Image (cartoon, rainbow, N blue to C red; front, side):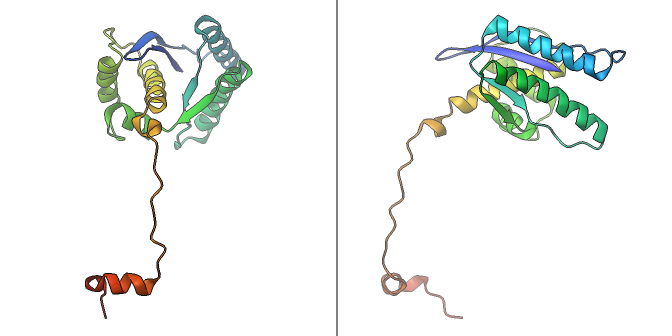
Length: 176
């Protein structure tokens, strides 16, 4: 399970920490969930984040893997909620779209764009870590979206009748 922590000012996104939790296959599932709980709690205490974003579960072929992933995500979400941090989920496609402009981008493309956006020079250790960083950057991009900040003016609608429309637009009338 990867994690990424960023700091944002008016013009830049700065990587604070990015890594992946190494979960031993020798430990039982409950011990691994406890490790996730402890790590997320530690990150929250260290960085005191304002937001918590996570990748939404994706559908795979292996039901057991899906259940384990859902439990792991649930533990991480519960820790954030208990700390009073708002949680937002993003689909893998939305994350890729936000970072690269292409919802079907591969992990290499996403990583290259993240290096540019967050001015990251380190060598990637794990795609789990870069995926987590992508979620964090995606969330920030959604928060600062130009579309979100724009005031949308209501469309004025002509409340005339169909007869008035036809009379005023005879070229748009098609008789079959």
